[in-house]
Structures are given as C-alpha cells and as structure tokens.
Amino acid sequence: MNETGFTGLTVVTVLYRSGDMLTETLPTWTRSAGGLPVRFIFADNWPEDGCEKVIAGCLADDRYVYLPDSSNPGFAAGCNRAVAAATTSHVLLLNPDVWLPDDALARICAAVAEEPGTPVAVGLAMHGGEYVGIDVNPISLFIDRSATASRAPLGPSGGAAVFSTALYRRFGGFYEHLFAWGEDADLAFRLYASGLRTRGLDLVLPHAGGHSVEGDDKLQGFRAFLLARNRLLVAARTFTWPLMLVALPILALAHVALAARRVRQGLLRPFLRGVGRGLAEAPAARRQWKGKRFGFASLFSYLTVRRA
Image (cartoon, rainbow, N blue to C red; front, side, top):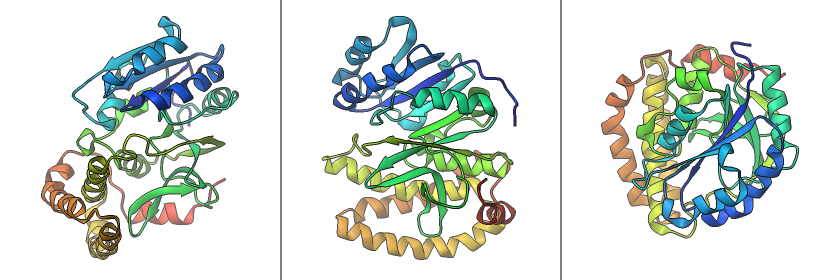
C-alpha cells in the first residue's frame, strides 16, 4: 500500500539509564546516517546520566531534538512524545542498545521508499537468536518472532520498527498506560485487525537487550509485574468478545505455567500483583480502544497466510 510518500526518516529513541550504552551505539548510528535524510529525536526518561552530552558529541545541533523528562512516563509515552515532534514522513523506533551497520539506514530508507504505507519490522539479534517483529503465542500471548518463521510478522517490535508517521498517529501510537513491555504487541494486534500487514526486512541488527533493568532486582520485579498485567490488558483491549471467551481459559492455564517460572526466578509476588492489577484494569482498558479488534478471522488469516 502507498498511502504516503517517503520524505525522510526520524530515528526515535527512548532513553533510560542509557548513557554508557549510547556511548557505544550512537557513533554507529551517525556513520550509518551519513548524508541520508535522517534525523534523530531522543526522549530521555533519565536525564541525569549524561546522554545529552553523548548526543551533542556525535550529532550536529540541527540534526536532533532532545526531550528530557525526569518523571519517567515510560517507554510508550516517550515514543509517542517523540513521534509527535517528528517532521519526517516516517519514523524508526530504535532501542539505544542496538548497533547499526554502516549500510543499515540506507537499506531501511530504500525499503520504506518502495512501500511507504507498510509498517516494517527490522530484525534484531539478541540472546543467541535472531528475531523479526512480533509473533502470537498461546502461553505468553505475544513473543519475539523468530527470523525463520514461515508467517509474516504480526507487527513490528518496538525495538526496531518503522511506521509512517501519519499511520502511527492515526492509531494513537502506543497505549501509554502499559508503560513498557507489550505496547508494541497492543499496536500490532490493532493494526492487523484493521487490515494493515507488516513487512519483515532482511536486516538483522545486533541488540544487547535489557540494559535498562540489568543488575537491578527492583526493576526486574517491575518488569515481571508489567508483563503479567500488560498481557491481560492487551488481550482485553484488542480481542473481540468471541476470541476473548476462548482465550480466557487458555490464558488462565498459561499464567499457572508462567507463575511456576516466576517462582524459580524469585519474582512470584510482582507477577501475582500484575495479574491482579490486569484483571482489575481490563474493563477500563477495553473501553479506551474503539477501533477494530482482533478476532477469529484475523487469527485464522495470521496463522495460515505465509510470508512472501
């Protein structure tokens, strides 16, 4: 689909305790950007760790916008705030712990120019595997999609995703109440239900993964809480009622299995708090999305249609 032309790309990055990581990765971004029509917007949710200085040392003043917010409104809100400030036709959501090969942004721009209206999932190499976009899973509801999967992605992963700026805004971007972990799946289900398909790009970027919570038990617990809560909220917001009635017992059994894993990780209490909060907040979350929802027809299409 070609609902809009390509007039440039803005790399949107949400920072949180990212100073050391950005020092490693940002020089690879600037080399990759070269003379391309690429700009940068950084939403910094932890401004005190020196990211602004790192950015100023790598990029000319007229090539980036820096948006600090010490209140830490979350990854979803940071992305939305940055995309609201973008002036290019397309945005690339990119995690700060991703390295870019020299030709990466040129390849992304070329792919977008071919199909400007189609979301693009860029591959990430992490934890010993390669992943492109988001996949549906009967236990965890959504997971990183293996690069070798026969199906096309449900949608792009928030770690490396390209959207038409107008399309992202039209769908309301990420659901900010999710804060982090699952907001990209929420948008992916909504896009798919509306008939929008995502293209996987044959490009895999090195990705550290988890730098913002690494080594911090409190943040690991917060992540376990959010994943448990957000899984329920994503289903409540994006599934049709018939699919919800079938999914609920499956999700209940899945959460028993997930609870056993959290016990081994020492994260059972935040996990259970997340489940309780998700059940309590599900009705309000559902009311906040008025568009098309992902149902049996969408699921059948996703499971049976192979990628080109």
